[in-house]
Amino acid sequence: MRRAEPPTVHHEGEWRPWRVTDAIPASSAGTRQSDESDPQSNSLPDNDQTSFFFHESSQVLTSLCGTLQVALLVDSDAQGYRRTIQHSFEQGERLVQLFRSFREEFETLRYNAGTDPLTGLKNRRTFEEYLGREISRSIRYGTSFALLLLDLRKFKLTNDTYGHAVGDDILRSVARACFEGTRASDISCRIGGDEFAILLPQAERSSVEAFAERVARKFGLYAKPLAPDTPLGIDYGIAIFPEDGDGATKLFQNADEKLYESKQRASRLLEGSVTA
Image (tube, rainbow, N blue to C red):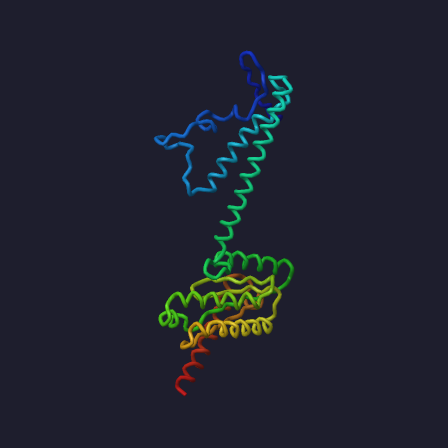
């Protein structure tokens, strides 16, 4: 079926082509004045920056839709034509500026939504997204990757002894140790209070174990001066896809089980050293 052509609107004494603004009800047009007593007012809350950018951009776009249809001008005067074109360019520049501001605001919001503010690592939400991507990519290309879980030993004791400010510095020390040892393709995340996860594409178990030991040693160097009288340390668990699980849930469970075994061994060693 052929699409219907837009209707042509006739006004007394002049003729012009149909414009997008003709289809916009007066109650929703950009020229409507804001009324504090009207719940449908165009006024926007100060903290709703996203709505503001969309609102302003739509107003400018509506104006552009009207002014750019200058192919059939009512006023044939060349000076009027130039004024119309100049106005269109000014509106276009304003629209570009608004969308640039919106893009910057959006990138900031996206970064904040996916980042742990204390450590600067990616948060649990982002970790789950990347885990799903790694599984899909490994299935598609027939590759593997490692999931490394890290957990702090005696962190609660440290918090109780030295306070939460020192505890925050210790968490940042974990992030520093992870950052210094990872490749550009690795994804480091803070997924809980003192729990961390790292995704290492195309990494073998032996290399991941060596990497985890390096992280633990680096963390010890950074954290010991902060809490010299507590036995701080890092325990870890490793799972390899698809060897240890062909899905996110199973893979994470296996890594968590390995982490628990690591914590149990460390606890027995610590108790043995205290007894001796």
